Length: 105
Image (cartoon, helix red, strand yellow):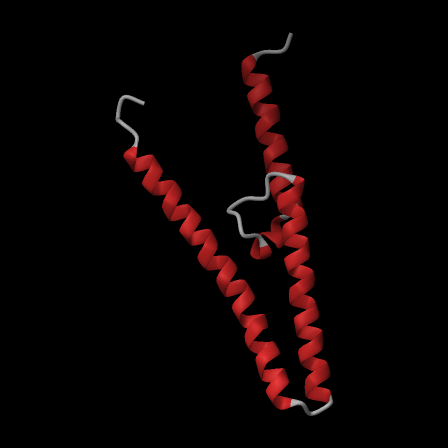
C-alpha cells in the first residue's frame, strides 16, 4: 500500500537526483534551481554562449586584435557576474515575500 511517507520519500529522491544531474549548469542559470526543462535549456544556451565568447577571445588574440579581444573577454566575465546578481536579487525578493507573510500562515 502506498502511504504518504513513501510518496514523500520518492519525491525527495527524485528531486535529489534531478539536482545532481544538472548541478554543473547551475552556474549559468538565471534561476535559483533547475526545476524544469526550460530552465535547463536556458542554462545550456548561456553555457554555450560563454564557451563561444571564450573561443572567440582566443581567436581574436591569435589574430592580434587586442581591442576586440578585450571587449569579448569583458563580456565573458560579465555574463556569469550578471547571472549571479540576478540569482541574488531573486533570492532577496523571495526572502522579503516570506517575511511579509503573517505569522498565522
